[in-house]
Image 1 (cartoon, rainbow, N blue to C red):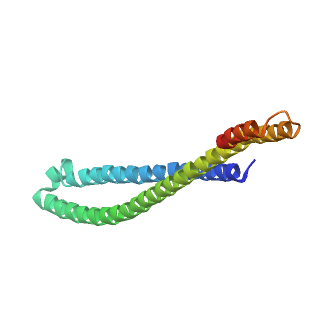
Image 2 (tube, one colour):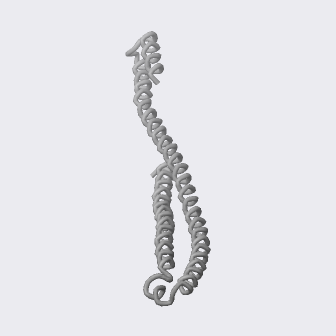
Length: 172
């Protein structure tokens, strides 16, 4: 295996590893999105419970003062819920932004490695074509040697030798 082929292999392995890491980072972003949705759901449920405070049989039996106290308690609970939700949303936002940044960074690294891989494959192709050209020129060199031998043996005149030699040199 040539050095270029080894580099190609290494770069391909790095790309596979980064793609795996990218999938994990995308899953993490999705987890933050789901955490936000879960928070919204639980918040809505908690607020729905506070709206029912003071209503029902207790509100009917104990009267308007009881209902007023329950409404104040509900307002206090809603304020606490809002404060807790704001703090949790800030943590979720921060975590999601970090995960999204990780996704962007990994995508950029993969893009750079793919460009490097493309360059390496181009180098490999160039080396392959150079080898082919070298192999193609070898028969012409052999023909030149045989042509010179034929001239030395007297089978060709000097004019014939020069003409044929020039044709072969032009083909190289």
